[in-house]
Length: 204
Length: 204
Figure (cartoon, rainbow over the protein chains, first blue to last red):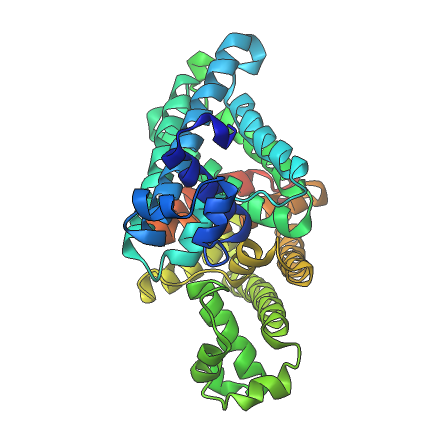
């Protein structure tokens, strides 16, 4: 979603999210955000009177909502395909594909805003930590619902959704360090069959 | 391992690793490291002429070696227990237990040095990125070997070790944000049985 489609306030939030996921919170300055969003520096004070902390918290909130929307879109695409593609492993593969495509397209500079805010702010800022927790929860809810739609019983849909998000986050770290998508391939190979095997027997 | 058991140089490296995993790389200053290690500031220039970058790279290397040693110790402990405990799910449970105990003992300020260096430095410092990749690889090798010792065929031991490390890293992020060990419980519940089911049939 290019930043130019948004109004000036959201452009600043999206730019902050994009810089934070690439460089971390510490290395992302307010001046960098204004420049990236092509906005006058004064607009930051205007829209974000709470300064960098407010902007960071809104960026992580935006990232959580964006991740949640992507889950819904992947599920819609699977519904449109139908047949053998409409399986939990197909949803996992779509999520993995989106991240590996972004990773390779950006020469492995692509990271996760929620992860960066957690690592850089969990200890120093309670509001940032809570914003990160809310973002994870806002991503987990539609993923749990999607796994339920794909006939995984409720008792396991939640724990499997958590496992998928955990391993996506960790695979992203390994992939950026190694500059390789190996860790994502391991997810498809090992988690895909686990998800499909969790489908209720009468629904297979 | 208390820092006081080491010589002055290693104390500085261990202190850097501990501050980085709690606060991130950006928020960890050289002065903080010297104070934490109870060392004169001049000793940093003496031992680390390459400055903060050298210290960060050595800290992530230390963290990788420490993670590798823990895998070996967990496997030794399982060997001593024997019987039903000596299963891949027992190794996973021991790794999860170590992190959840550290998390709750530190009021969820405990993080991973390798993850922090990846997020804060992957884009800005090629040597730090390579040090993080080396640390992940140094952790993956003994875990792959341990899963092999526990009778998982070589073809899957490597991808399952990658999945375990990915999900540990991601669960740590979620746990710190949420201040809850829920994501680790999901790992035991879902990955434990997957690991045990991967044991070669004649070895069960």
